[in-house]
Image 1 (cartoon, one colour):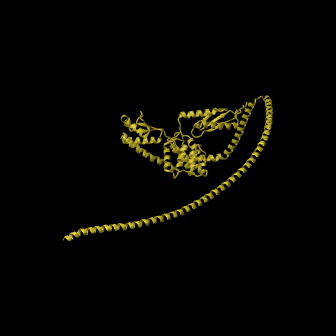
Image 2 (tube, rainbow, N blue to C red; image 1 turned 180 degrees about the vertical axis):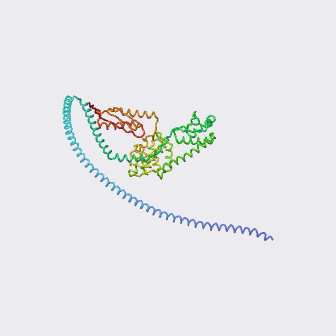
Image 3 (cartoon, rainbow, N blue to C red; image 1 turned 90 degrees about the vertical axis):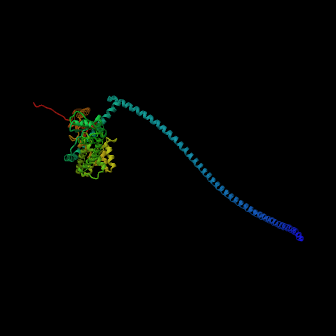
Length: 525
């Protein structure tokens, strides 16, 4: 037992010694291995450094070679560019030298021309002085001759000029009047008979009725009690009616009647229709008035369209745009000098068609031109411009033929007449407006126009007396036989007509007749 207890510490000590000896031996081995690794690493590092130095030397040599190659290339390019620029500079220098030579040659030429010009100017100045001397001599000679002529003639130079100018003007006017008279007589001999037959035939075959409208429409009432109902409490009804229709309602002492007054015949007709409906219905108050006026306005649109369609149907005109038809219908409620414009247009259209047929032209196109020639009067109160301009623009907008457009624009000579149809329209328009009874005007204006017409004719030299006849359609001028010859009478007629055109306003046309007669009286004893 004691031997076993003694052997255990010895065993432990032996184990510890064995461990220590193992650890020491391990340290010695590991140290030997680490030294070998360090030696190997140092050798490897030295080898890598040597390889890197060799590679760096190679790269350095390659970089030097590349740099030298680039330097040689850049040097070659620069040398080539220098040579090219030097060649261009040589060319420019040569061109500049050539130009200097050319400029020098031109300068020499200009100097020579300048010298020649100075010589010419000197010669011209010498000749100019000679001409001036000669002109002074001629002027002096003319002055002396004029002085002698003035003494011989007893007239100054200005008086002689004026007398010569007057004589030449009179002579030229006489010759022109003679030529014009001869041409006019020749034209009248050739065309008067045929023209008379064409125009008269058209007039006799056209018998359109003329409707005369006024600015006042009379509405009959069943009794005077209705006037109070139309006026309404505190005038409410009459104010509403006037506001909605645009016409004035005149309630006066006229028994069983009131007046509708307005310059727009379409509005006046709408007012008449609405007033008759209100009177028949008996219910008169602002709301009812508004309903009836609106209904009457719609009916008026239909009536206007039907009037235009009827006019086209009566004349045999087809293919007219609905807007043009509507405007033609409005002409039924438009008057000119008291003449209904739609009736006048139909009358003009009929005569244009007849005259076109007699002349071998298209009668339907002639009727179309005549019917639409005054269409601008339907809108001339609403838009700025003359009825010829407005009518031409309107029909052109709705694709009417160019001949119709020109007829609308030129029938009062506002623009040139391009075909024969506007001439027919102008003639038919004058015939329709000039026939007796077609138009009316106040008596006072009529008398003043006749007096003014006679005064214009009396203002001319050589006129003995002037008479306006045929309701102002003709002026007859009696001249002094001793002061006016036949050619002067022809000139006088033209001058009077021109003055009438420029200073008077009149419907249709005015005929100017100059009468010159010679009377010789003897007595048988």
